[in-house]
Image 1 (tube, rainbow, N blue to C red):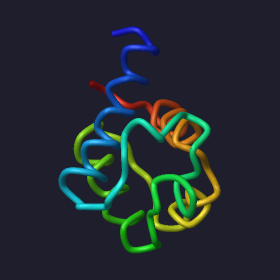
Image 2 (cartoon, rainbow, N blue to C red):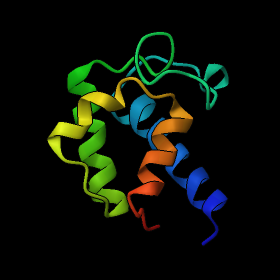
Image 3 (tube, rainbow, N blue to C red):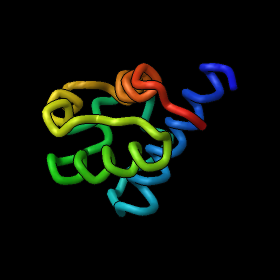
Length: 91
């Protein structure tokens, strides 16, 4: 699977998880790769970020240690996708 295909799959998983499963009220139309993971973007608080991280680990076979979760809050959606890919995500 090409990296861009994997990127798209991770991006879609994040958006579907946040909007449909975690019930965070967002419009997909307003979210881009430059949107922050927290305020003004995906609107994830610290507990929501932990939940999303656990789901990403389970779905894509990556390991994100607890000590690495807090720094994820400073990323954009595109940065989060790149981080998951960089940790060896598998489709």
